[in-house]
Image (cartoon, rainbow, N blue to C red; front, side):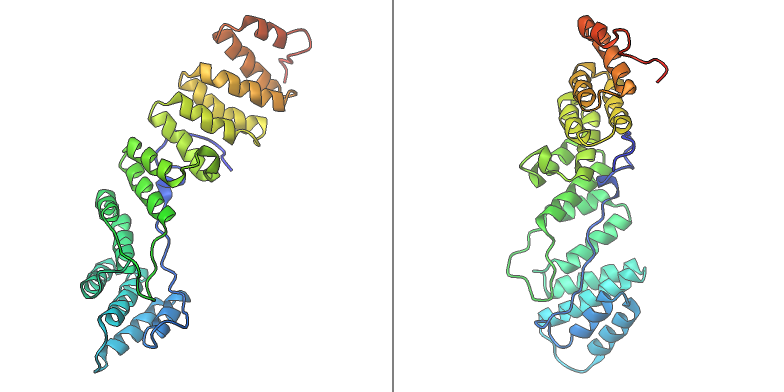
Length: 279
């Protein structure tokens, strides 16, 4: 639930977004050599995965390029989860050398760039990444929505607001009502950064619909404080119509009516008994 909308870039969904971790879910189609490594990673035991992967790779046998690439992905993930990002990057690179047509090693590389706050490099890497299907049975493609969230997030961290808006519009082509609440809250913040009062009002209308008066007021005051009183007035009317007993909303509405020249409406709201100044 939104408790306080602010304009700080470090708050919200996109400012704290991270790529989903690889799942390494074991399944019957995995090659026999890969299954025990995936099992160790899936159960959160990177040390065991490292041991198993190294043991298999040290064996004197030939592997298909795809199979060896998967083993290198397992090593890269185990190194990453153990905090060894440099070794993880090297193993991911070796995996890509063996089998470029995969997502997993790229995802490990992108995660490392994000950890290192190299957001521009991460953005450029992902935006230029196209992996043709079909992918190998051990690979984990990045969902389109996750890709767009990541691109929006890294653009957000770079302060490239129009680019953020473009990615969110692409992710949610059905518009604001289709956005999850946490994304809609970021769209509201984004509207402030982009100086888009209409966008802010449209997001606020949805966000305040089921919020109590105090929380609705916190959000709407952000619009008022931005100087967008014309857009704030109908929103306060709607909020007050849902909670006509709220003296806080009544006072806010009176003040906005006066500022916007709606004096008859302000008088009606301040008739004797209508406004309790003690509230």
